[in-house]
Image (tube, rainbow, N blue to C red; front, side):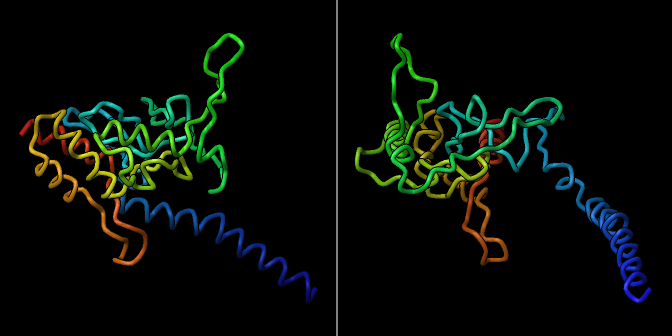
Length: 216
């Protein structure tokens, strides 16, 4: 009984704590911040759901800022639908010395088509990034512009990445580049508590701010 009694009491305690107290405590906390608890969803002026602050979208048109490369889904990102569902997240799991990560894979099938297993490496992504943003062949490129995030759906890019894209965006929108840079600064999130992480720019929120500035 000396061993059985404390075992039973501990089992009951943790059953009540982990099965009732803890879940309801989290639920109560969630009620105080409903936006975050429901996925930090963003709606447009018409009340239509357009995305989440937490998940990247595949912007590719020149008048928008582009997110990081991705290894998730057929389009490279999770697919956002009316049920708030995403296809999931994925990473390449390639090490920094991987030849595939650096140089990519570019093969042809027997009929001359691109092999489904082809993969753009850092060098390929850097060439494409420099070309679309009017950069020189040897200009330095931010790491986040040519590497896929661990989740594949990271919604942020570095301020440096955003600044390098600002000229392209400004030209496509016929806006002064200084106005675009002001929007970048206004949408830059600083380090958490001033210490943790690095400054970052949420691509979806920045692109929404761009569209709103045009309407104003």
